Image (spheres, rainbow, N blue to C red):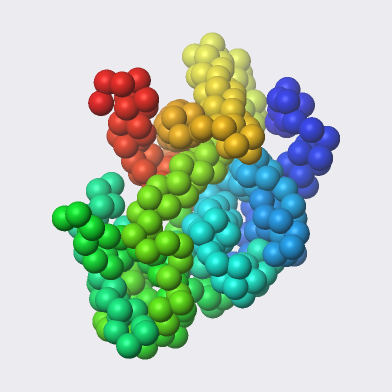
Length: 386
């Protein structure tokens, strides 16, 4: 069910979306069940994504990127999310949380050193923000970094960090308290390479969903890195990351739309083939209306992320629109996963069917990159009522 023609896409954008969609169907989807079952990220698939240039889509060619924009990245994420959310989040996090902070806030030397391998998919990076006591309240960060002899000495822990423990993970960027300013925590971001003594990637989580995605807790015990590993201006780490989160919410919205559409496609196909009491399940009005609601959600949510991404790429304010897109699309993914599972009946409870995996995977879309409650708060603030 290719609806790209109904949206205001350029010829290049339609070609990109179609290319990634074909890759998702032919390469990603056949591996998804086994990857989910074994909790294993297929690194050969990640390598092929790199060869296709997906990790470099929104970056300039001078650093090894494709010279595209954020909208192009989101088209690719949506196409992948339709068949496998774990693969889609690997791309989303690899770009939005791994490479983008370096591109946005790094020195020219840091960009030249770190970006080429990230943008080619030869390396991945994680971003350590969330802590056991600092989730939505990221300002409650307890991880510390103090300067000592020209080095940052880092102590603390992070949790739920994507792409932090793969065979090609090069580094993580962590937020840490580096002092105080006017009685408030001074939070900075610091690049910590893998293999740094005192930096431990703990065993991966046993997750409900996104089971093929690489996700670990991290611990730092007197981990030492050069002072030059500061990413961006000292004390601006938290503010900078809020901007990265705003962008990431558009990407999560695109992923959510892909998931919602994947559920719709599967439900339509199953309803047309499944015979109940002598007629196709799709012949029953109750099912027709349910499928129509699913299509409504996909259409509205896609328009929302398209609008936010276009604003972002045009250099216009997009914070509120990103929150609306993330809220709308993640709700659509969860609602469509539930309805698709209902259409499938008992088969929808079996992990071999994509709708079952979407049902487990989609819940985190309402939590990651800022919970939906946080999105409501962002929207309320824009209205001047919070």
